Image 1 (cartoon, rainbow, N blue to C red):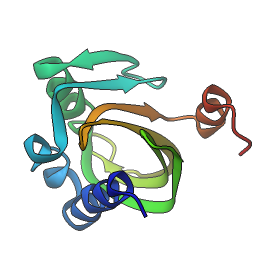
Image 2: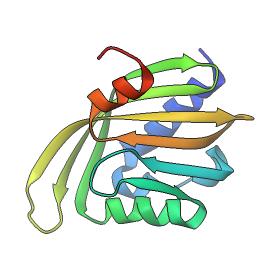
Image 3: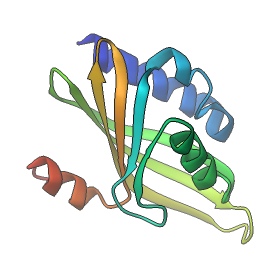
Image 4: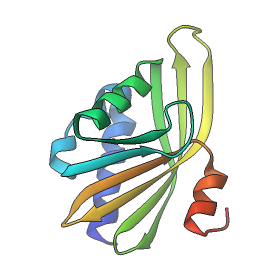
Length: 134
């Protein structure tokens, strides 16, 4: 198992334990100073760096009263990328309705730090972008 995969597993262990409050906790330890967050699709699609990345993630989280992360699978794509297939289960702030969706995230690495995270609401798009079969 690679150090990159170990790091992603530790990030998700924190997220699975703490939900919304843990998403950005400790990010300074695992993220590169030039970290980029990319929402490949979904309601807040776009590319964000620095403070914009943090604000984008907080904006996404603001819609949820409760949000849980459940990892289904980790895949090392190569030396510099790890794919995570996860299920996000949440309860909306405004509606109180609980929903669940299967999503994907790709973590990119340089010098032992996450340089980029690409989040996909649509797993099929993630597989297509990566040239993988679902």
